[in-house]
Length: 96
Image (cartoon, rainbow, N blue to C red; front, side, top):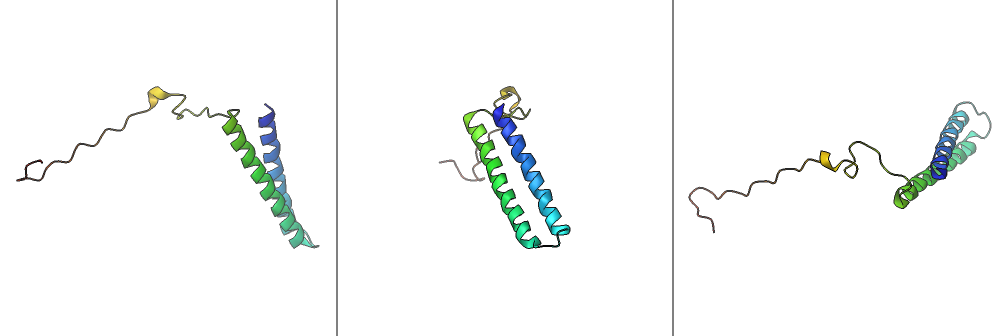
């Protein structure tokens, strides 16, 4: 449960950083370029932490898929693809 809370907090922080960068871009009259780049760098770091946390949770098994198309959850729903027929010999030639 702690991992899911961390993921939600990181996602909210990324969204806040996104809107602060938008604010610096549109309304800021001061040194907006530097503050905008700082907001971008913060957003990149937070997004990398978010992706790393999700990868860690998936790797350790704390996060798993509950999608209806997941093969591990519903093996009976997986259809086997038909095997292709062997190639036919050309007319007038005998198989070797």
